[in-house]
Length: 429
Image (cartoon, rainbow, N blue to C red; front, side, top):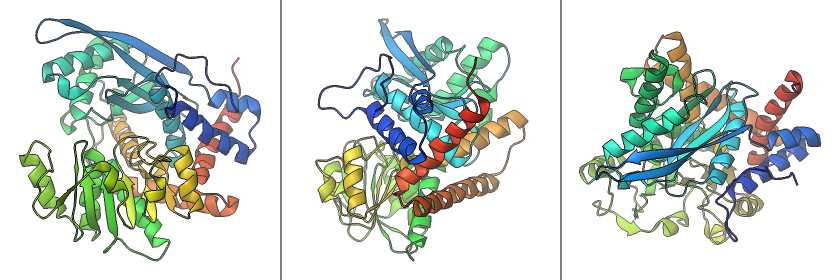
């Protein structure tokens, strides 16, 4: 067992699934399979830099509140740090550190010249006005001004943030350095250097990986029964694209509730309904209300957890009836639950592969921004699909060669590439 970093990774409590411990467990399994030496494992298990900043913000009522913002930079062995910025009440330094590590392996797996990072603020954005969120985002960016940049660390949207926050971050950074720097963030609006195809990218990547996995067992998306936990940016996009491809979407959910129809949901009509009802899907005609817990246990061919981490645990894993679980969220299946699913022969498409479409198109956006040459959506989607399919096939090949499950195969590829680069670069000084 590697030693835990001597960092204030607060957030784990007794009986709580520790995200960083879980991330280190996957790293250790890959290191054992790869026969990495202890020194390399020690380096890879520690984030290179952990930044925590105070964010004083004036609320609309005139009160001052001081928030804590984090940015964890795990590795830049392969290139600049890359990772999302999360606004969610459950954000902790422990969680952010785990997600930064996972981003390192994800980028390496996809062959993208990035290292892993993650940032976040423990707030519920629904409790703040647009003006307050702008002030929070701009001050957070200002506090990190020396720690981010197009050749250093490139933030992106994550849970609770969107293109709007990225535009504020880009503008704040640009004002501080004195000129426009579109490459400092990705996931921006197209008007300020964003990429076509970025909004649907993560969901499209999920659809591609599910399609490839089904093809390997002689099936197509036509008529496949799919259940999706989540109907936001990722889950909604995946639902739309899978529906277009002929899949039957039995159920979807939001944080508040879920809906189910054994005959399949009309996803375009549901998206229009949600848009007219402040993102609520409750009461959609022809559907039955269902809880998030019940949704996960529905009989289906493909289950897509597209919400938050730790959704399939030891408590409910025995009730999972899907043949394929595609991790559209980061870490939705706990370590122990993953072992149970693999032992039962359930195909688990790991998050560092299944949800990589977002970072792939973020990379393509970054490339476009640096070159000041922008592509149409067809080219973006084509480039992304090529990288996703290539990574899937490499993982499948690795799984067969090593006789290991897909998750371990994906980690051996990602971790192995970073370890090789570390070996080739050497240790400074």
